[in-house]
Length: 216
Image 1: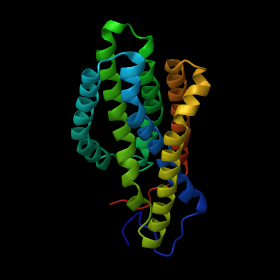
Image 2 (image 1 turned 120 degrees about the horizontal axis):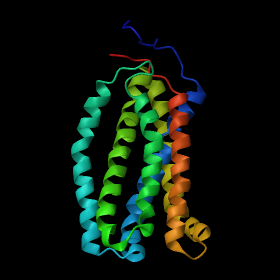
Image 3 (image 1 turned 30 degrees about the vertical axis):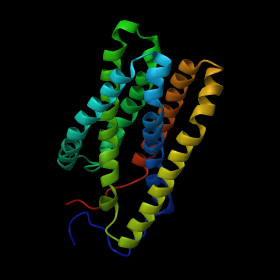
């Protein structure tokens, strides 16, 4: 057996399986929230032109696409006591939460620099999301070799992802209205802080309650 490999008969605890799935809950929640409402927020609430807002989002996602393999290579070369992949959750959780709030802070920024601010903050958000989500997704094979245990991890991940999507798609606008009390700019910013806090707590919970057993 390779050093660090687990026995096939070893079962993962329910706590570890649930906490692994908790990592995808905030990622899915934030991804769907930004993907569904940011363009509306930029154009209808902030006043950025549709063409400019679309360019900002498209260009940032294009740059981010080139960074996906870079993060994969860097995480593969990471070597810490916590493993190769889990440390990225620890490093990215709080910066990603702050970057989400920064994206929706744009209403407090002077109008003449809002487009540049939007580009910078959205790009940073996308890069930090990649730094968190790519290593998280790659963690499963490092947690267990057992196919049955991986299926349990995958089911937990699916539940977390589904609940995150449900929260962001089904309750985001009601929460914006509740938190903003009629002011959607305030509501979106307040909700971004709330979602950022949830993200930081859940991602760190995943980090502290999982373990990489398989080390190539």
